[in-house]
Image (cartoon, protein in one colour):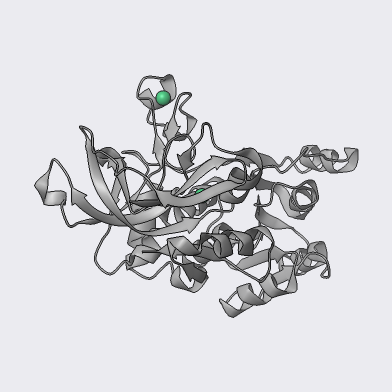
Length: 342
Ligand SMILES: [Zn+2]
Ligand SMILES: [Zn+2]
């Protein structure tokens, strides 16, 4: 079969690889859509995977073509990409994202930028009627967004600031809207992203380089500040803005993977103390019996509470990978979700 195989940093090849062999407890999935995650860019071009070669791709959906349980054949599914060890304390309490010895499709082991992938049956998130493969391939960012939203603690009537207008930020905004959040402030750093967010129905999208964010939040909240701010960029300046825009006793959720040192001035640090802010981290998503961000995500897609098709700006076939990856890496034009469709 054909696959995008990473042989070394910056050495991604579209090539023939052996068909994956399904083991006990696994199904064989014919991949139908796989997104390029923002994290795939540094993975391919800067940091590499845990060993080489590795087939990349962890945001995907497909059709089950082989399974022990014959009822599964022909079913469509998204896949939770994290494979927990099943032995550690985190696994015993079903906090799989905190597993100390996990495996991962598309980074620690082969992923889905390929025609087929054998995946654990336990990791399947079966799709309800009416959810397309393209939408389902966004279950991972959707589950991450839902997970972060839980941490924010906001609800109807509140003001939520989301720093970062990317796929996850926009899904968060859609999710917040269905939860009745009154003011959804989306913060970007380029006009085209701000325009994109406005066109999706978020009039409070602003450009941090031009607009006075703090003033806007104060106007919206009679000087109180935002109930919660979610930092999605992993940079110090946005983190500072989140801390200064949060209201007293508000919440600041750190979600973005840090791109370097995260620094606060003494003044900003004081704000955490004086406002008694709640600082929360969010990591990955829940996929367990108590809380399952994935089933929530696909249900919301079916009920059109999440409208994810509008976030897909570019689709490619797998052999067009050079164009697809360079589009994101070089930011040649505005993009939101870039996806391979097979
Ligand atoms: Zn991802
Ligand atoms: Zn574990």
